[in-house]
Image (cartoon, rainbow, N blue to C red; front, side, top):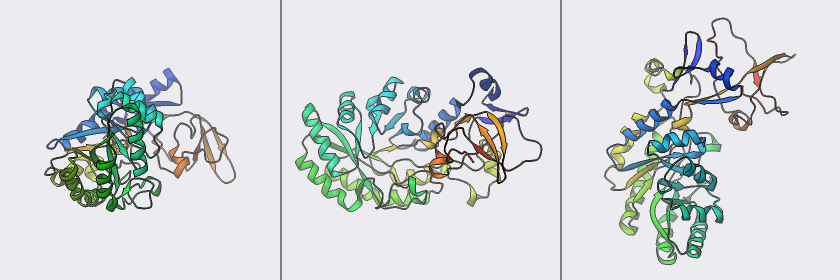
Length: 365
């Protein structure tokens, strides 16, 4: 669900006419629905309500300070991938003690800053990084909390650029290597405390099956690490997909009800119903790292059509927003629905919508 719909022929965000915002602020303009963001966060939180858990919003999905402040006020945790993201979370009122630091390329300055701020845990991607974390923590005279990211070699069946749980991906440590790594770390790394385990198999998943496969594969490993090393939490990542084709219509409950069961995208309720029974007996705190799910359908990029250009091969609508404002179509031809502010009633034509940047890759459709 989301807060965007036509009312009396004009596109609104909640109770606000988008044309009014365009007139007041100009374009291009990002507009977000606070109610949608909070609704998605709260429904996910409630879906896991029966087990000890934390919903840690993935800041990379949208690091706008107002978005972060909204979630901080709702007592969300945060999944960060840079020192800059941690700075923004703190600036927005977020609690660093509820932050986990992920990413394959953390710098010394970022590690030092995160240790000084007292983050909850580092999600470590390799033995080399774990040893480096120990070195930096030793220099500061502190103990670094950490979790190693396990690569379960599960096919998320998503776009290759956002698949992160296969052996050929750059993320995490091979599943079979985890027990020995934890044992070596316990003996050799005095300035690291391995307090958890982390995984994330990919983004934009619209089926529950890969989640179930990953959880069922890794759960015995998490239990083993709890018994042998006393880990406290297991971060199962994020990745629940959102609606891109028909995204505007999907804000209406009728859209979901009209879909045959096999064609409906994965819902938050289905996610919780499938995973909670597989997690509740573990006695571990479960961390989630949703990003796209929280904000992906909670905002629009409002842009103005400057003029129409008719060529021999195509007709182009040239708008004042470019790929610098929305990179996904140019990056990997990601689909984003384009909706006019005035509800269309007549015939439609096929056109290309393009931006003002001097590259042919600057397009929206």
